[in-house]
Image (cartoon, rainbow, N blue to C red; front, side):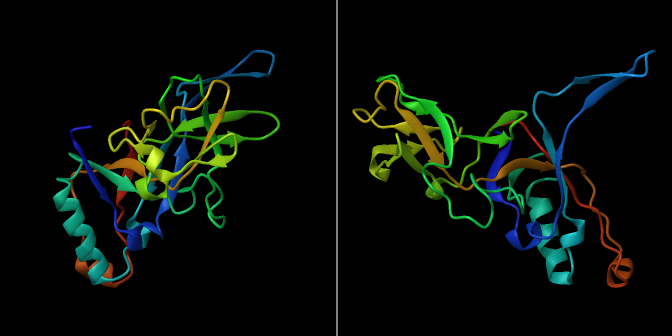
Length: 212
């Protein structure tokens, strides 16, 4: 995306943010007392608020500088979700077998990163477009692939196998990775009263996920 800056929101401020995935569901009450529910969005859209993370004047200065560099809502940027930033649980080390990203056919070289969520009742897959490139580990049929046999596309986040190393037909391709969420600020005005700030009133700094 041309309006995207490939920089990360300051980690110190990201750790204490609030927010998470949001969905939009239409609910119709039927005459028999039941409900008819329809999902308007196929995928969740994440929203965050970094206001609670601003605790000192230095934090405020860091936020102001980052906001100005993004020109408010104009440019997107990377944001690390404090609880969902790995292909596995936050406390577990990533492994090349964390998530299945495809099945080889002997010719296909490009595989998109995904993270699967679910349980016995249902599951859903989330496209990952902003992985932390150096963190991406790949395996074929459970065997780790040397890092010199694939690259990670900086624009799409796809894993691309180099010529001659394409997965064989029927081979399961898996990956482990850390990732960021592409977001933008959800306001063009950042107005803070220092008197209120010193008194403990923290400003709201909303951010919303954007499509890659």
